[in-house]
Length: 463
Ligand code: UD1
Ligand code: CA
Figure (cartoon, rainbow, N blue to C red):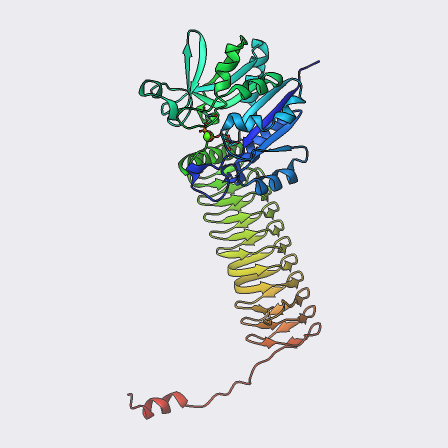
């Protein structure tokens, strides 16, 4: 029978170097909290058990994780005394497990499934009791350095290192596989650092060797994958790497990214083939874009579904909405949450739509506000139309039936209904329902005063 593999994620640290009120592993990167990546790696491995050590900010972390990964077990580390202490806080859970355990720091979101898989294979083949990932960095600052003395590994933390050891470029990635039974025994033997007073998990490497057990390292050349995020600079750096990986995946899937250096697409966004994304767009998680869509520059799309053939013209914002096939939006359109635009809808410049539905082929091409409205098909909304949906207390609905024609600068004072095929005269303030096929008009009659302009000029003494 294949030995079982479990994963323990260390996520209790505060992340002092982030200078933040949010626990470090909860900081978003690529639109997802850092810990999400590590959890995904643990799940797809697959891991038999997933244990998450929580401490700082544990409420938000547990709330997030338990909603998505029902089977994750939480253990609490009361005081953040170091990574070895974090492992010890899982003593009860670990003592019940058979097989091996993968230990992942919660701040390594760039690690890929393939690297962990290869590492695990090599570990099994080597018949070692502990394996750990190492890499050679040009700038190893901040990482534990890996040194070998008379054939034995030793990891020295930056803070405990002398100048000679600080020059070592081989680093500990903070990713280990250890036989379950041995891990606890070794972690319990760790003594606090004389420099920082912290209990370093890295000390188990030496401890396990002194127990006459074999230790092996897995060296990776892909240094990006082992990047540990300790501060905001590393966060920005990982953001760039994750973004580029996402754009590459999209391009491999047949999406044109006009300028990958200036396009930002979060990790879980889906885009169909033959769609084009122009520069300076920000497309956020929860978004699904169909085939043959064009997203012009400067647009922000969040948690929205765009069907095939949609064109989003420059500088438009779409949030939590559904856009039908071949619809055209913008430039400068704003589609706010809970809007549903059917096929071939046209939304032009400076039009804001909120919590409204627009039927097939309906057009609102210029300067309008449509809120809490249900609008039928082939309706024409003239420039400057406003649904006056708020009476100071409540949001009231507007209904406009199929093929109605709303003249420019109409104020529709909700609740109000415009019947099928009805027309509204320009500049009307509509406070009463308009029946089917009727003309609704509310406007003082126009008066023309002959020669008024000339008389006025004379009065004021102008020639
Ligand atoms: C750690 C390693 C270092 C390695 C680096 C790789 C130790 C002592 N050092 O250093 O050798 O090069 O990772 O990125 O392990 N945590 C807890 N409880 C604690 C302290 C930390 O759960 O008491 C968690 C943190 O939330 C974090 C992880 O452990 O996810 C690593 O802690 P961090 O402080 O980032 O360690 P590094 O200094 O980066
Ligand atoms: Ca770290």
